[in-house]
Length: 247
Length: 294
Image (cartoon, rainbow over all chains, first blue to last red; front, side):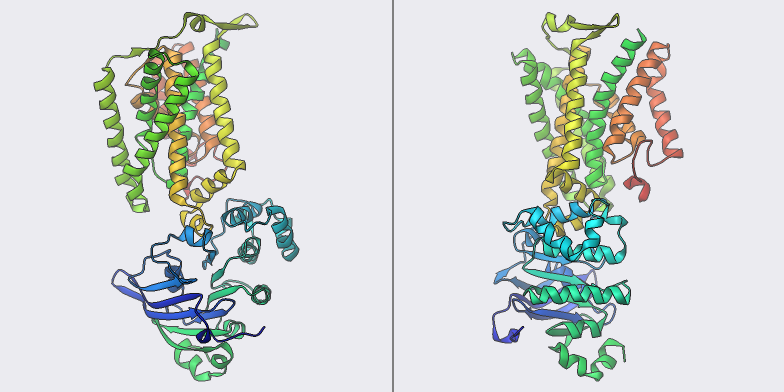
């Protein structure tokens, strides 16, 4: 897919000088980043760098101390999380996946579809989803809480298929998964990328994220210290030693 | 005679169950107890009695009560719970809703007096009964039971099968996750208060029709007893509230039948303490209640 630098077109998601604090602790300190429509951007950094906090603040799950976030050209400061999800199509999948454990797999998908049906009947939407995730079809009537970690991650990705978001924010999609499942998850995400889905993901699995993303930002102690294309950052061995604590 | 007492117990139990389901719905989505609920149930009886006195038919009176009590439930949510949603605010919301209930009680006593107010039912309705195997059953009581069961079945189906029900269950599990699914958590909580309070209002009128009068005592007596029934059945579990209500209703009726009526109230509270000690999740909860998981 021909991809153009975000610098050359208007940003779909535009985070400007974002600050987030937990009491006296400043978790995010003046972060600015952009994601263009159809682009895949990764935020990498060591544990505790403020990556998850940044994503949570973008979708208004936690209050911002200061700074601005624009989505599709509109400021999001006073828009509640559920409106960003339902009306604006901002789908955030947190680290713990946040599937509704007491609801069945099918009910989880139906809630996602009901929020943004996009003119497509639920039956048709699930047909496509179960084509990609036959395991979920087998478990359609089971509570989501009974699924394994990998299956729950599949369910969160299936939610993005049943009602495609305008932007998908993923927090640690490979966390706690076996190497085989990580490969499966990234295969699905590559498929999303081919479809032109805009994605912003946070990852501790730095190499997987940089190989996957068009561009990436490196976060350290709440501040963006470096940015560039995934390929360029991957080739920068100094970056790994200096900021990511890996060799 | 025994059969008649058991039916009486089931009728009373269905009203307990209606009130207990209101407590459990609110507890389910907020993890908090609404102490104004019993007084809203009490108020339902007075509005019903007055509506009938002003010429409303029983169905119209029921509808009016459910609308007024439902609206009052929205007010309780706004005043006593909206600002106190955090997990640290259990005591604040409990105190606020308790105070709200006391205000309702005081206003009722100032408006209608402290003595019970009789409901004016047509004589034909009062004496109508059905005979089955030689036993007479009051048509009014059977109607109350029938409508209560229909309401609870409708509530169960709504929670299990509808989009609103899925949203309520989603919020009950996690308000944060629900909001990430695009669910307006505040709207769902409002709807839960509306439903719970409308059902309590219905139970209030039904009790006034069953006993022949509205009384300002019932919020503290029967309303709070329904709270015990919720705990006995399983906090946050609709089925538990239903089965717990019927069980306590029948056991109370049998206690009266066998001459232990004076001990019925104490028995319910002791039973609740016993259940909480040996099975904190309640007798009928299908899964661990939120309280037990905490």
